[in-house]
Length: 290
Length: 290
Image (cartoon, rainbow over all chains, first blue to last red; front, side, top):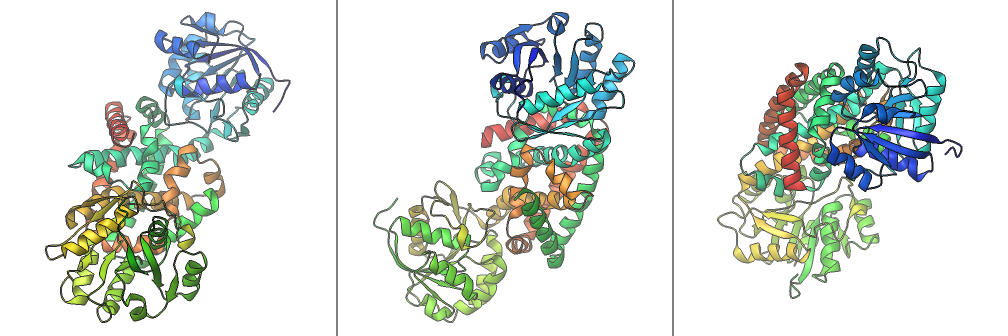
């Protein structure tokens, strides 16, 4: 951790579990002097202040960003285009802008659309961490420790801005890496967005069966873990699906094809296919996540 | 827990994580005097004995079952028909027979096939507990505490046999319930067998992408839990698929249809469909597994 990294004023736009965890992590590591949160829901803002996650709250965006070293967009993706529109008139040259969105091409396009071109002081970022719990009450200082944060800088991204955001996440204990935008969106579609679709879809399939209560009563050991991510915020996941739909649809089709083949193998009691598939999957899982 | 319940001689056929956990649980609660394991793999049997999970091991089945109060079949499902064939010539009238298989119609059919008719002293049972780890090394005395065990007695099942097996599982801390065979197989297909297929299939889909290592490196928080069950024993799951394929295929088709609809909604950025599905799933998950 860098001990000489200090943000004088941090502005968080959308202080839920992700923005709140960033605030708590930086605070814990003495990497920030003052944190202000901007939002449109006064009640939620006041909870953030009451919990001590932020120092000040405001519903005035020019007030929020004024003199901020770093501005972090931590809203659901769907709100970002409108936030960029508001920011373009109030953001000063002293501020570095970054985000935590799970679909980077979408965020970059939205910023370009609002600013005319991608601002050099904007560093697109995505911390690969999170919890199925939403709201600032779920914010944890340790959320990013030993987790990856992916930065997707563009050709015109200012190098000081880039290194500041890298240092900010390193101060939270994260392992920060750079990646191409398209590759980020593909990797996340595969490893995060697709699993969330499967969890939501499975729980929904079961919930529409007769005897819901009984079905869930008998859910075996692994089921609870397997479906935990279906407790994630529906609005946030709606936005991710829409924002990364090109890559997500590709992965859904690939998975669908594989599952159809597996279904056929079960139907035919094709022992070789079943054993090979399960063995290959177990080996990969044990090798990479063991 | 019943303190007056004692098995003098327990015979476990197939002493892996499930049979081993039963042995450890009964031993811990002083509900068994002597445990003998039958198996065909000497090395595995000796590990069970060395770990103190069982008192004796034998590769002679008539020796194993002789004078046993309770005989528990804890092999993979695929081995059960052959075991029933072997048992029919050696099992005495003093013994109660039970199993731990995840597909009850299959086990009942196999027993009928070998014995000519379903033996009255056979109590089909299924503990809804387990771990993705296999082998007797993974056996835990507490595996069945506060977990369900489903019994699927038939019209001719002896009531003393039934109550003995009920007491055996209660002595392990389990909550024992009776269920119709077809209903058991349907509920388990939905809540256990289908999720395992999805986990195996997802890991397999990802493992066949380029840059496997990278794909798994960036797997987000929920992914590890979501895919944990893909580490389960491939042979055991092959057998479950084949044994319960009628019910499992039905569930796979139902899930496939739902996933196709969801895929279409993502493609079309159908916000209402996505939000409704995710919200319904989150509500069901929070209500039933919260």
